Amino acid sequence: DEYARCMESLDGNDAAGKAIAQDYLEHSTAIYKGEVIRIGYIPKLFDGPMLKFIDSVQQTTYHILEKVIDKYMADPEYRKLFEFSDELDRLIRIPCGYDCKIPIGRFDIFLNEEDLSFKFCEFNTDGSSAMNEDRESTNSLSRTPTFDAFSKKHKIVPQELFDGWVDAFMEIYDSYDAKVENPTIAIVDFDHSASHTEFDEFQRRFEQKGMHTVIAWVPELEYREGEAGGDAGLYTKGGQKIDVVYRRAVTAEIMEALEGKRTPEEQAGAQALVRAYERHEVCLIGSFKTQIAHCKQIFQVLHNDATSAILTPEERDFVREHVPMTAFLTPNQVNIDEVKANKDEWIIKPSDSYGSTGVFAGIDYEQAEWEKLVEQNTGMDHIVQTYCKQYATPNCKPNSADEPLAPWNNLIGYYNYGGKFGGLFNRAGQKGIIVGYAGGITVPTFLVDCDLEELDLPYLRERIPERN
Image (cartoon, rainbow, N blue to C red; front, side):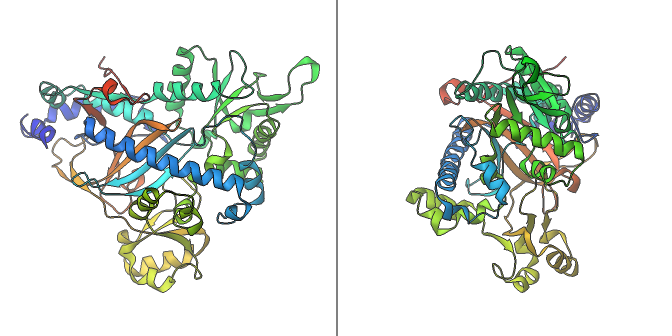
């Protein structure tokens, strides 16, 4: 509210500042799938107590997921709760050579900022992204008169989301049981799914730490048996041996490639990655066991009695309070007629996907449309989940100088770096789902009046705004 008042004190809406912010975005690396991102002009502001609260949520969530992964690895009966293929199950259970269960993740919550009640939206693991969106969006706002006016009253700084993950990544690799000196790091993804500018920035940050780093698309990966005196293992097509992979390629896309549902080149590259991994010739950060947390089935499993049995009473309460009811959209798990009849209470999601692809919130559809969507998506490929009420705050976009403040529903994502709180990514929307293709916006995140050393959050960093 105070930040909005600063904006309104500048000719009613700081039209000059909005033009500055939008011009910066238009000439920045804030590009996702070929388009300049849309942002909110009113940022999300986090002080010390709120950061400590998010840290406590991160710690509890991570410890619960650690227990689930350990149970999966140890108990064949527990594995049956997950609808994984035999091949994926095999990949999950290959030893990865380090202890960290989920090296990186972004866990999204719908948080009521007044009473701190919240519900989880989803857990993202290896493909977790948007660090560059936050960097560029905060750079854009830090140039504006509104930001300057607010900064006269408060210490306000953006987060540094790259270096914390680079440090966590190298600490995980340092614990790897077959680490080598001066490793070559490969950032690996499918070209069509990648955030290219973000990969470039990560490559630069790894290189700054003295780590030789390449960006390698899955079709470019090769497995070499070690002929002619070379070492066996994973290579780029240019002949560079890869020692450690920062895996941005999500498991679902790798599995599709392995199953021949992608191009022959993608299949060959995925096979090369798996062969080197199963022979313990490359360190994979993260391993395939992260899929246990990433898959949408996890919410259903968390409520299962077998999971409750391995949790503390406090953790069981945490699950009951914060994890929405989830089930496969099948007649033996839910009442299909009830889902059809009460559309505003439900949301449909693919059981394994990312980026909100194929997600349908009943609140966004007319009754007849919703009933058709339920029929089209009934089956084990989709889950249905109770729809979570969202918390709205006033915002507007800078690309329209006269756009008034209006309510925008918020979605807060907190990053997990090596099992610890690494930072935040905020989005907002005005429809049932909060995503770019549904008109959603990135909301720049700033830390306000914080002493990070006192807060003891080792992977959360402040950053000097890039204003030149």
